[in-house]
Each structure stands twice: as C-alpha cells, then as structure tokens.
Image (cartoon, rainbow, N blue to C red):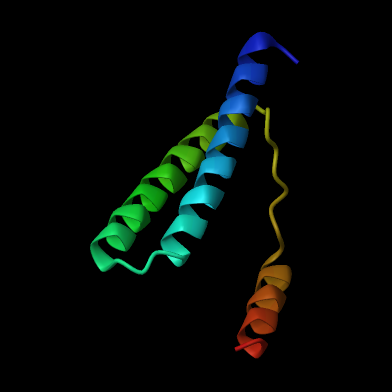
Length: 83
C-alpha cells in the first residue's frame, strides 16, 4: 500500500466515524434548530465521504463488485417486507 493510499484510506475511515457521530447527535437532539444543523453537517460529511470513496474506487483502491439486477430486486423486496 503506497503512502497516498494509506492517507486516503485514513481519510475515508475518519469520514465514516464522523458520519456515525453526527448521525447519533442528530438522532438524540431535541432542539429543532440544532437538529437541523446536525442534519446539514451529516449530509455534508456523507458527500465528502462519497467523494473520497469515488476517488479511491477510480484508482482501484476500493473495488466494488456490481450486483446483478436480480440481487438488487431481491434486496429491495427484503427491505420492503421489513416495513
């Protein structure tokens, strides 16, 4: 693993941790303006996380396997059945 890959992997892990913290804070906030601010920060952090992931994926540092349309439909059906 090269230095750039280590740095960007650490950045992605940091973003994952931050989104978890903001998610918890937003979910437990009882003051609506503060909750709205937390939700905005959460969205921003998810966008940053996605940017980092996209950069890693394009360099082959975070490969993902495409799911078949059948697997996607099965996952959707399972999620819908939980509601």
